[in-house]
Length: 170
Image (cartoon, rainbow, N blue to C red):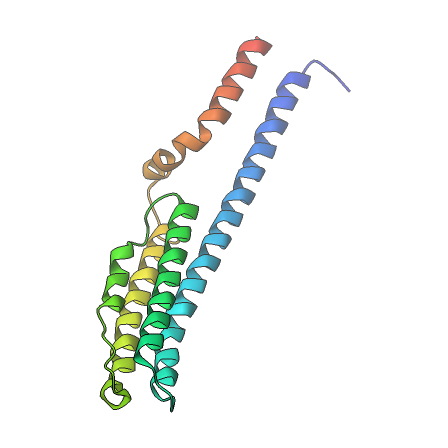
């Protein structure tokens, strides 16, 4: 075994290890983001069903139902904010959730029979926008230069470290 190439071997080993760690971190971040997106979609899909059950109750209360509905929508907004912070950029605009807040419950339960269908339609539109945003972010093919531009900041530390090692070794 020759130690003449040891610095070069260590550099190649470090670069390979760094690339492997980078791929693992990227994969974990993507999986966590998609998990958060699925949570948002599940909450949006459950909202019309909850509203339908609430309206069909014998003891329907307008005040309780409006407060709980607003709470559900607020939870969804918080989850969207968490997803955007996790990703590091606003891939889902919170403004699209405003459509859910425009629905108004009426005091009589019979007058609200069409409301779950309207909420379901709005929720499906929002889900479609969320799915397309996440697809564009994680699964759309992009060119090599735009890929490098997106990760230049992430790799700046690695590039600086490799340059430092090359300067020290020479």
